[in-house]
Image (cartoon, rainbow, N blue to C red; front, top):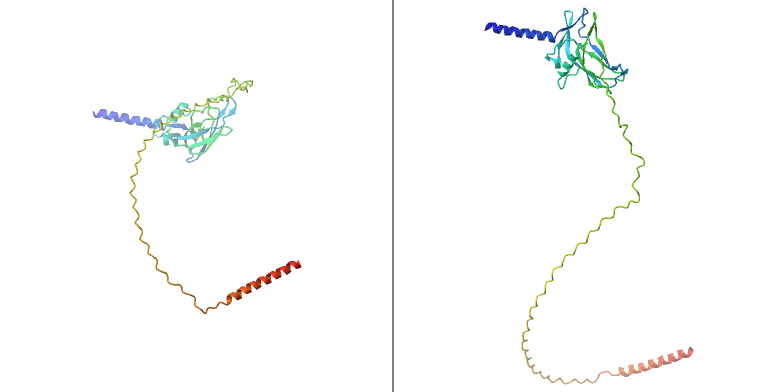
Length: 294
């Protein structure tokens, strides 16, 4: 039993060693020394060699897949960031299927190393890149073309006995997409000789007027009630006979008139009478003289 357990443990150790070798394998070997901490750059050009035109517009994005290290004159890689523990063996970096496998491993929100738009000449330049292995993807296709396929690029890149820190890449462009015509050419236009609506077409007759509503039947008048019989007036009371007036009191005999006393003054009476006659005569004379003068 102990020998069986020992074999299982030994097989597990060997499997772990194989995974480490596959994930961090020596990719390049050169005699030149690697400058630690030196930054590099990547210059990508998208060019349609068949039509001899650059691809304009679009967007390229870089994702760092692995970090580089120098071991005994060899350049090796170790997965980093979002790709740690992905388990995809790193073989030929120029193999497009390897880049496709790593692209499928990207999380929903991946860590972006750099991102650039493609200019009018088809260039996208990435500068100040740390040393490492990068996955290049076109996250927005150029106008009139399909997006390019993902590819891998190493910074630095060995060149004989030296290292290239400023790398140029010209990937194969995608297929062209024909422009969709705005209006189908075979669609006939509306014939110009279509007559307008004839002017003598009578207008729609007015709507038939509604019938007047029938008046409601008036209610039957209520017959007046029979007036009550007038009450016969009662017999007036017998008038009361007036009382006999009292017998008038016989007036008492008036007192005897008092005779004027003698000795009263009676002379002014004739004097006043004579004065009146005299004034009348004077007035008459004056009136006559006035008439004669006139």
